[in-house]
Image 1: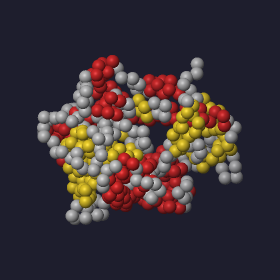
Image 2: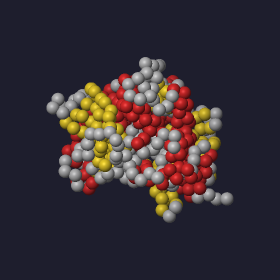
Image 3: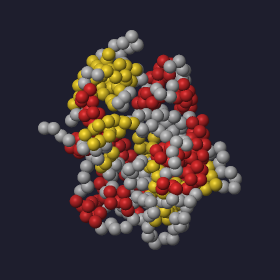
Image 4: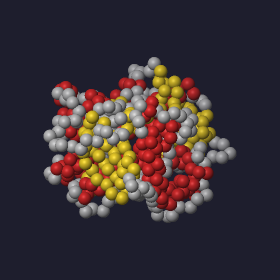
Length: 487
C-alpha cells in the first residue's frame, strides 16, 4: 500500500508516541474558550503604545514574542521581550493542557504542522497577533554600550503587536538589499526601532562570541510543494533578522532563569553539556590545520569556527554540521535553588531556560506558571518530583518530535530524488554508529545512509556519493561511496 506524505507524517507521529490529533475532551474545552488573555482582575501596566513588533517566518501565525527597544540617557538600551501569556488561557490540568503535556512540543513537518495547542489558541487567542491587545510576560533588560546585560526583571503587562514582520524581508532591508517591509512602513518610527534593535543585538552577539558562544550555520532542506508533489528542495541560511531574534531570546531566557533562581524557585534549565566526542572535534580541527586544547573549551572552539567561516564561508555549513553532531544533544534538567548551574556549552552561558515560546513548547509554559507563582508569592504549581519527571519527559518527546520531522524530511527528500538514482553527489559524513554511517549531500541538501564503502569513514569526512536507492515510505536514501583520488 502506498501512503501519501501526509499519511507518512501521521504514522510517524504515532510510531514515536506522539498524538497527531486533539482528543474529544480537549475540543470540548476549546469550544468554551472565546477570548484571549486580555482581562484580569489585577491592574497591569498598559504598554500597548510601545512600538512592539514580531519577526518570524513568513507563514507563522503562532506568534509567541514581540520586541521593543528604548534608548537610555546613559547610552545603553532597554530591551523588552513580550511573551504571550498562554498560561492565562490554558488551565493547568485541563484536557488541552494534558494533550500539550503529552506531546510537549509542536511538530513541524513540510506537509503539516501538528500544533501542541489547538490552532484556535496558538494562531489566534494566545498569539500576539498584529493589532490585538494581549497580556504578555515582559522580560526587561538594560543593555550597556558593550552589549552586557546590566540588570533585568520580569513582569506582566498589556501589549499590542504593531507590525507583523518576517525574517527575510527585514534582513534584506537591514542589509540594504530590499525596501522596508510594508507592515513596518505603516507604523511611524518602526524603521528607527528596527535599526536600534539590530544594533544592540549585534553588540550582544559579539560579546557572546567573545565569551565562547559557538557560531554555527547548518542547512535544513525545505520542500517546495505543488499539487501535493515535491518539485524542489531549498534551504535557508541564517540572516541578520534571525540572529536579532536569537540574541534577544537568549537574553530573555537567561533573564527568566535568573528571576526564578532569585525568587528561590526550581526551574527546568536547558542544558548542553561539554561534548563527549571532544577528541573527534580536535581531530576535525587538526585536519584543517588548527589546534584545539585537549579538554573541552568553548572559547577556543568558537575562535576556531570564526576563523574557518572567514576562510571558507561556502563550506562553513558543512563544518558546522559536523560540530553540531559531535557536540551532542540538548536536554532539560531540573535545577534547584542554590545548585551550581550545568550551563549551555554551545551558548557559553550558565543561566538558561526555555521560556519564550509557550505556544509551541511545554517547558516554556511550565516556566510561565513558575514565574506567575513567584510573582504572586505562591507555592510552585509543580512539586520537585513532578518537575524532575517533566524534565525527562520533555527531553524524550522533543527527541521524538525531531525524529518525526527528520523522517518526514527524508521521505520528502526520497520523493524528490527518486528520478535521480544513479547520479553522483558531493557529501559530508554526519553520523557514525553501530547502526550505520550517514552522509549529507551538499545539493540538494539531503541525508542518507552510506550502504557501500562506508568502512573507515567518520564524522566530518568529505565523500563522493552515488545514489543507489530510495524508499519514500520509510524515508530511506541509500548511497554508495565513490572512491576518488581524494578519498
